[in-house]
Length: 577
Image (cartoon, rainbow, N blue to C red; front, top):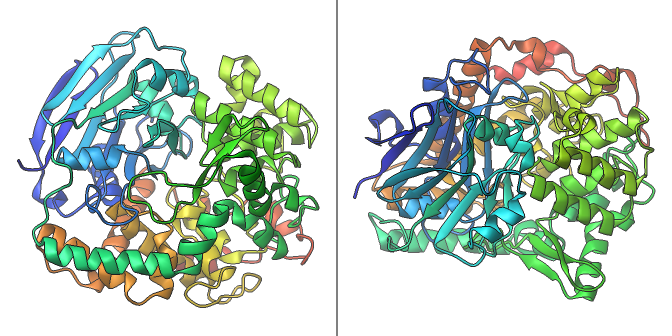
């Protein structure tokens, strides 16, 4: 059975199975979603109209036994930013698609009538059926009513109420092995899925192969073992993330003076310890939750967790640093129980936790509620859930909320909210925010690894020297990693362990029977970035859009009195490769 592409046209409810074009055979994950979007989507189209397409693709190593290889990519033109967009998440979908030898699932068109549908994907094709019973339901109710919580052979991609309403902050939820959800988060891809009239997609791999075929299984096993060892031996991948989750960063980033506080007024939050990874881990252990938890099968880092309340009842999992920062230091709320409850609500509604939480901070900036008002935060999320007029504004994201309330202090780039590192104090990540092809996004070139965690060397976060080159190199590497289906966090080991990257190359060669070298990985990453940038340029984006909001260059950031001091010409040097 050869790999194939399933194409679903929602305008006439037709399904086609296609052979993989030669140009796409060596691509997977982000490289493939961006290639398809660039080739088939008119860059100037309305992202919620009939001419946009939603593409899902497992990574090149998904479906194998490679550690941390279970990421699924989704791509489209973003309704939030207007740029090309790729988002990836763990869960079970990538492995199941790969096992069914589905190279990509392309959803195009919009229904002729106002009707939602369910898609059932098997190795043999896609079945489209009207869906009426689950409209208006959150993600938790969807997975429960479909009886998929414990079904390891059937994956689920679904949208909540926000996606049904085409809200620009809406995400796509991906069921994990325990029936909880991971998120294809940023850029409003849930709104694209909603615009296509698709409420949920099931991926049924029952009866298929348990792992994808390997051209050289012996060589793959050796390389996979080397790679897993590199991850487990790394202090971040093998120790820190498992012990405290990504939230280990709260105290670290605060200590460097780069923890954005009260809508980016300071780099220090005086109650940072109350929302830290150490505090969270302590609470989880005392209450009988899980300090370590994997978002997909084969994860050796276990950086997720299961957060429970005082009675030991489940609240949320995948409680990430960026979410905790955005509701915590950014909104000045120091109660992890409230933050966990809010995280659960956002997972159920189906909104990007970074975009939504930064937007709540802007609601505080506008005086709708006060900074530090945890109960108010929960009330505003209820507005988003019910779709009240205020909820519709907030659900449209930070940029629209800022414009609606006449705010000038709006931390966005290309209309996407800036995440959990102040670019004045961590200048490398500022370059990433500016030049990212998808709006402000820390994951697309995580210079924090070198600026703060000193992986792969050290570039002083408060100095300009070396930041453009650092961001460029990491964005190229990340684009390649996103194409393999590997978790972004493997980059820590790639930066520090000389065996890690060659092991990835060896796994790819053994999987497909090819002869890649390390330089080919760099070439792949560069090609992905150039493809994405060309799409954006055709959509009307210029270098003038690669800039931070002006308050970053006008206000110094305590406690280091750091300032954003890059010129436009210096930022534009990024694209000289």
